[in-house]
Length: 115
Image 1 (cartoon, helix red, strand yellow):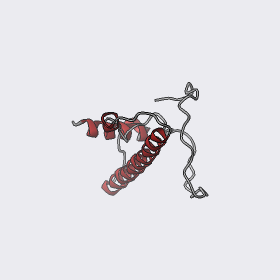
Image 2 (image 1 turned 180 degrees about the vertical axis):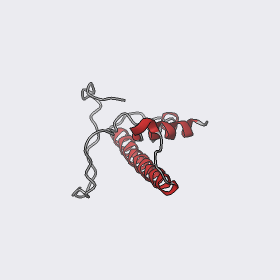
Image 3 (image 1 turned 90 degrees about the vertical axis):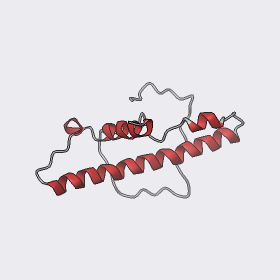
Image 4 (image 1 turned 90 degrees about the horizontal axis):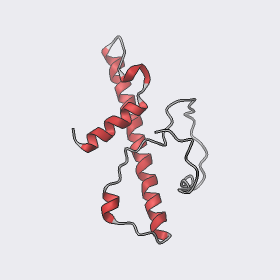
């Protein structure tokens, strides 16, 4: 399996944690629906990560940090440490205003994070 496939698989495993990451439906269409929904969620997470990685790189460059192309080439949109799959979810569109949320402060205490 390629590193990219492994990264997507690991992200899917983090998101699809219930029932030991196995699809349990009594009918084939239900399984397709479940896997299709997982694919949509994974695509959204990868897009979200890509947009914010790009924002972070632009901010670092604007602040004068040396951002090497070789380092950027090793970045992956399959990061998952910041994703919380437990809890309550609201699928109402929030009022975001004209911009994105602020980037995480790299000097902040991350002791509460889980991988």
